[in-house]
Image 1: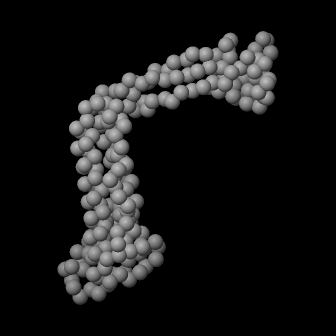
Image 2: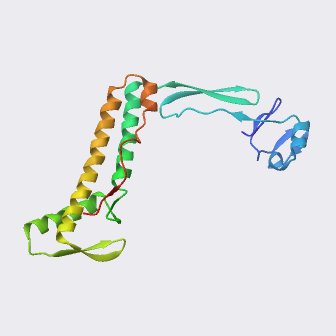
Image 3: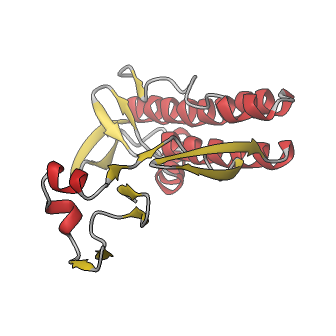
Length: 199
């Protein structure tokens, strides 16, 4: 709703309308000059910030051209469950975003980590394997055994740190008793840079 008229109420810029028995086509409000709209009694609509409906029961208030909103927080347990779901999404995004080790970006999603861990375990069991051929950014490269094992450890530490940080945030959210504090809680802290030095 872009425009307000005391007789017509709220209209979008693309709405067709009839005023004083004159029909105005769709899009007239969008393309008319400011003076033309003002002459007909149209005033720009002002719309206030709307609370997030996931966390608040929202009420809309209309007063002439002004539209405002008020929000009442939902139940504390419901808000906490939503924030913990947000936290899991954040953890997965960081965990699956990869890690740069020695200038090389390596995948850290669950399947890639499983492959990497399996190969590192093979190297530890069989010390006669001198190196591993591994595809990085679509290119097959040879990585010396010790470097590969250390790289695997770096990725393992990174993934564990993601879960540790999620756990710390979960405890902090669980301890909050004010719904507004839960809503405002910042889950973006503590994840660190997705990189590690060359092994």
